[in-house]
Amino acid sequence: MPDFPQADDTGIRARGIAFGWPVRLTGPLDDMAFEGANIWVTDKLLVAGGIRWGEIAGSRWRRKRTMDAQMAKPRAGLCVWPYDLEELRRALAGVENLRKAVGIVNPRPPGWRNDLIQFVKKSVARSLGWYTRPLQEFNASVSRSLTEIFSALEYLSANLVALDERLAHEQLELLHEQVRALVTLENSETIEAPAANPATNVEKPVFGGTRLGNDRTAYVLGLFGTGRLYINELILQNIGERAKYFRDELPLYPGPTSMICSGHVTMKYLSRAQAPPAIMGRILEAVKARFADSIFIYRHPVDSLLTNWVWWRTYIHDKRTICGISEIYERADDLCVDLDQNFFEFKAFAEGDPDFYLGTAGPRFLSFAEFVEETALHFQSATLALRLEDFMINPLQEFSKIVDVMSVNLDLSRLRIPPPRSKPYGYLAVKEKVPRFKNFIDRLHAETKRRIRRVGYDMGD
Image (cartoon, rainbow, N blue to C red; front, top):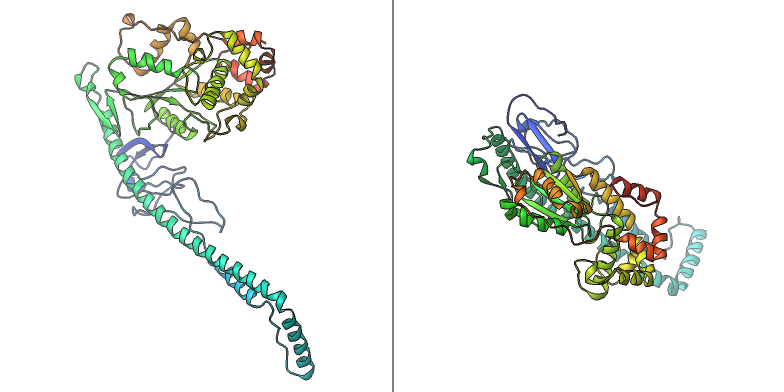
């Protein structure tokens, strides 16, 4: 757990996650504030997490809206900075005055010489009416357009401020409820029942989830094409009573639950068919706060590369999904022939070329280098990292690691865990039969190869 500030030695304590930030309070909440957040503390309730901590003068709810300069950027969080439109209003008035001055003869002091000069200038101005009249009409049109733009900006600014206030109120109400639940959770954990006490098996609701005993939320994570669905099936068929809390999605909870949540998610790059890094950031905060555990399943990245290439080209060309390469190719030789004939398409996919996804909506999938980097990041942060290939050797031993992390009481001797249907290191056979594929692997960037070795695989060089 990270270090948290202390207000004093009295008052309530709350532990939780507010907007993804781990929070611990000790002392009266109305003496605390989060400097750097947009919503502060009121009525002894925590209403937002923040980046830095500071003191607040009084307990009245307020929001910090200061700008060091007219173009200053707002800090992270829910906030709309009101832009001062006065300068734009003055500039618009100046445009209108300049428009009216087009074609007008400037005044001069009285006198016969100046009168003669003015007569000549007015005569020239009248003779150029055919030229200045379109300019005046154009300038008038520009002035009207700028006026409409200014009115639209004023309207948009007013609506954004109103929306900001409404969202702030909604977040305030939500976080009021979160703190009540987190305080209740903290109080309940101070009185731990014995392990044999039946009360520890009572289901307790936790904001959309359920907690059984002292369980923590388990997140089964993987990148696309790494064997996560195989792990899902093992859990559903063998984990016992807790299987009823399984969800093939990645919801977020403010406290520990018995839920088992599974999904594809990235840590750094946005990718099609995978939850964004923002979701993974919230999961990591829950893991650090000991509300949850993350179980990461992965396989050799080059095997995943071939699988994903076949999956995506089938989805794009045939508008259908598959469960594995074997649905398309009965033999490895068929895959090798297709890869050799469509190698430039494969290379475009591996390099993350957006043209590979022409005709489909949404962002592209990860490039191979990004995929390997994501694997290394997950490997470093996971509570438990499991290789799919190890399940092919001893599936019961690997599944027992999942059981240990989830703290599930199972008789492992009664389990019959099947290995995955995928063949390990299938890319090696393809590498021997497709020279261009072998050359592609040999020329991988040194950092990509280093990351592959870091997660436990030999590149054979």
